[in-house]
Image (tube, rainbow, N blue to C red):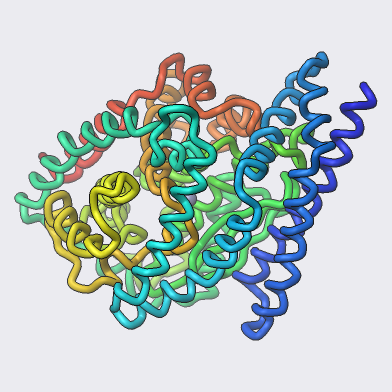
Length: 496
Ligand code: ZN
């Protein structure tokens, strides 16, 4: 191996070590750190991130990256080089001082958001959001290629290659097909009984179930852990240390599906090959592809009747007083009930993408300057009424429900809906290759998992989401698969 490559590798390993330390602090903050630790720990994290910024923007690193471009590299090395270049470019293009002010701003913004939400007062958050938006636009302008729209630059941060042009077509299709489907379901007036999912579900038992399910779908506890946090998430130091969280409440299905969802993220991270782990390419390839894996396990597998055939008796055994008289069919229908509500994270499988559509359409006009930050609450409510048939009664149930904008994540939301659509395309393809429901019925999820590992997980950032989809399914991204999947499934459940 060349000396240049060795030197590059060493520098990148140093930067990666800092990243891992920051990931660990972030995990600790959300799970175990004492409440009073925040300010002092934040100073440590700021130092680490300052050193990381220096390492990544160092001139020598740029020279090494350029020099390695012309060398003959194997596939993994090429993947690492590409990913490292991208990470560096994102940092060097930004004006350093403004970037630091912005980092400080977003660090404070989530608590402003939380207070505004608590007070049901959007006007407390609006000025901060305006400031964040103006920084985001400035940074996007620094990164934009000639003629590129600012919102497209922001979208590209989360899902490369999915610009407004592609997303407009995607969301138009959802609007045409899913809004009428939801209307039809509502017109049936049927309300699937689900009250038995709420009530006396002791936390220790829920935890036992959570561990069982995570392991059952394939999360490896020798290389992973699970903890509790306010909002469930998954993070990874490397492929031998992947961490999930969940959150327990009185609805047993909330934590149950959240655990299967996070396990999907975790299985992806554990499946990245050893040769890429702990390098710049050693993460899931994009937000959308990551979300496709979590939603695949949560919905295509976890909300499938066949999945529950061998598993439901275990659930009844854990919660005999609540579930012994509930049939598998009633349980299956309850976990697939469609009930449009104002809150995205509580949304059912069918309405979920409509929540995302509202956010996409608003971000688009907001970044383009067609509406002001002040107009957001009203526009939000109007769109909910139009697409979901409900109007949020308060701002905490409306425009202030998500933390994303306060963290500067504008352009992030579409990857949630794309993930669901990728998952449907992957599932439709896998059905042509193997008997999916038969495997679920036999509890043979490792066959499904290995298939995904082989075609998606092991590559890390080595291939982008479009390439992975194309190589796996033989087709470009096809949103129609998603619409067909939903129409078939919910058409059957509601007889529409
Ligand atoms: Zn997720």
